[in-house]
Length: 422
Image (cartoon, rainbow, N blue to C red; front, side, top):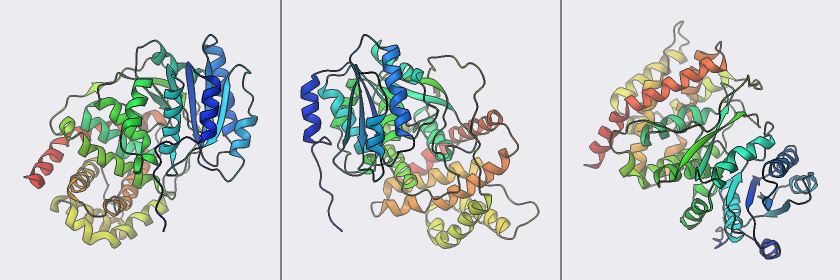
């Protein structure tokens, strides 16, 4: 297997030629993409409308940063109608394939063009409106924020990695109640973009799917002013929670655990919860597309994964957590009338066990994170069964209660960390 070349820049020479031509920009919208031919045109069109409507007196550009799509993504991005006074560039970035490298190119362009504000949007959005551009850019331009995180209404079965891992852990660790740490759509200042560019992470999982949690965690821990913007419904290329996670799970969770090491001084103590302001009011009802869940697949992934990785779980988990997990597995496998619930209390302590071991484990950390996956499927199955007949709003309260459990059990994490590091 060949070694991936490390690049000092994610930009190709033709992009530098474009930059030299337009000189400067006020507002830059970046869209990372890969094989997004069905949705990219709509996203480009909506961002163009938003720039024209809300920032008519500013020089604006849309920069589409593509990962070498094998479909017609780049063609659709070029064809999408946008106002003639808005600059557009579509390019293939250089470096490790992934969303992180794609955004690295966006940050570089923003700094070279001396942008005053930057917004980034995922390329699979179906619910983006011109207003989204205003909500992410305006707080940066007026100086009221340096990082704008999204706040969405989402279907109860959407965003399960966020709901069951990234949100409750980020909230408990750093005391910042930021609901969508890996939302995908952000606003940021050039100062923050410069910080990101200078960090030596572009040959790690951050260059792939780890970018969103890395951006958010750095912003809240490095002293930048963070707010949330309510964007309404998040409708995108959502998947059944039981579908193949691919590399996303591993890269997101690895980055989350890596950041715990980087910011140990920020979490290795009791931290009071600090709400992050939502800068616009929530009005009206939001229609969400239904998402189906395959409970049988979640069950199978948990049962088979537990059987396979049981010896490693015994090594990683506390004896009490392992005993509870074995009880759940036995109950589910025997299909007892009243099966044991894989509840938030046990789930939080299991994640904390893995997080501690990750800090000490110098060999094959990827393998360590991979074996969490069956347990994640097990917890997701219990959650889905719990909220099956609930509204999305009622299910959100279940997620909030789980986050409070993670906060309550933070002392468990600190005690385990102290025990292993003494």
